[in-house]
Length: 437
Image 1 (cartoon, one colour):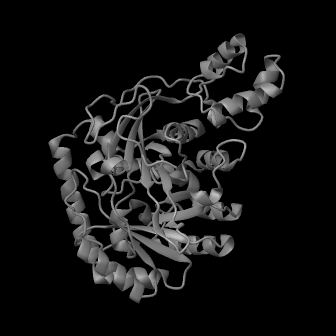
Image 2 (cartoon, one colour; image 1 turned 135 degrees about the vertical axis):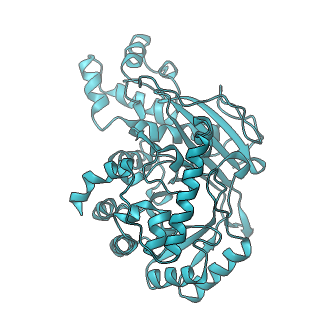
Image 3 (cartoon, rainbow, N blue to C red; image 1 turned 120 degrees about the horizontal axis):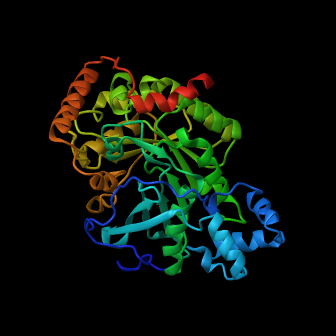
């Protein structure tokens, strides 16, 4: 497998830069293309359409091979089909649900941030991260194999509204269709194939809360792990959640082989109320209890993501609370210094503080790894590019948001619970699921 190529080896029509790209893609509002994407069709849908068209059943395999083996970007590329059938297929379906891409390369080619424009003008993001092989054993084989991990979005925007996340500034747009999720993977795979490589891991840690679009996410995971489609083993897929307890319980019933990751960020309810507003509906103890049950049934270790914010959640008290919460569980904590996000008063914890926090967790019986931020110069934090293209919010709104964050975090550090109602978008998103508790 070759090293990531030099900047410029991207999809036709995409732009690339070693720094922030020139503004080309912007959020718009117009009607969504009603044609479903071929990559996201449910079982039997293609066969039913072909039968209605009077076509033989074997055409379905030809079409799927074109989508998944050839990774066609347009129906006209499916040359195993007669021209007349290609024309009818193009009228009914889309080979690609992404209208345009803008790729930004950073970290000397190790990080590629892509801004995707959808047919209705919505902007979503994915990040492709390359990890070269590291270390050698006595036989000269790499101890850590080369990996190419793609982080994808499940929603346009996000209703959860975590204040340290740039996507939270955008608010909630809409759920993504199954094909819109999968086509992010197909776009990255197309770039990797051109370099003689392939994706090794897919993580649902981009824009949106995956468990608030769980049906579509599960359909996407099924396609990713299907040997007849993308063919990525389920153990190479990670689904992240900020704590949608009914969704975690539902996943546990499915006994999946993919990894569940919990965006925790605080072990104390008053602070997590501020950092993860969903905590006001499902407190941290309920989230961890659901995750613990998931690990017991599946035998799969839970990954807990913890963004480190200076002076907010990086104290010894926080480390001890986190160790007490997770001690004895099949769990591992990933410590991630906060990416700089506009319009927040916070900064990332220092490297010394993060290292100390990790050591305190280890002393408390909980494993932890310090993760390095990738692609900061490319706006690789979730939602940063899309937020930039959405335009600068009014100054009074920025000032109000910063003041609110400061007041809420100061109250949380005193131990006061947040009694405010959930944001309207988040309340609407979780209300249909409360009956499942």
